[in-house]
Image (cartoon, rainbow, N blue to C red):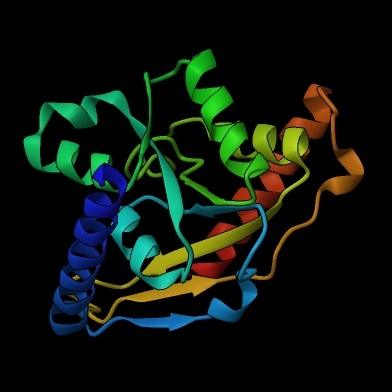
Length: 198
């Protein structure tokens, strides 16, 4: 019963977010066909604002579980969103075993995992080092990575665009723990995301 109520709440909230973004930002989605309709997949996007996770949720066409920082729970509203969307909470700059296991299990179940390699809002602009979590999950699970670039939505260009790129296949490196390989995969993922924001 609890899961049924959560699913209903999720549907209502997704509908409300979709309408809000459509009216306020007149957003358009490009490349949605690049997201596999079933099977494990990792969606990685650039992180500009609090709207990014909801935007991916309402445009990707999949049930997506987000990796989100634990501080999310300090806000009742964000904690509610995290609850109904089954967010996987992690401590900042921590590779918490529970969160890692839950994320890998999500992919093992054939579901969609979503995260932001920047690790924080506008991470690249702040000079933050890109996190290797996406590469880690891709190499451990063998799941394809779908890059996502979110652009617009600003005063100078109010129309918001969510663009999904072709899936990136790193299965040839599956199981690798080599730092050079992890860094290479991380760089390719982030490069694809940046390209999609242009």
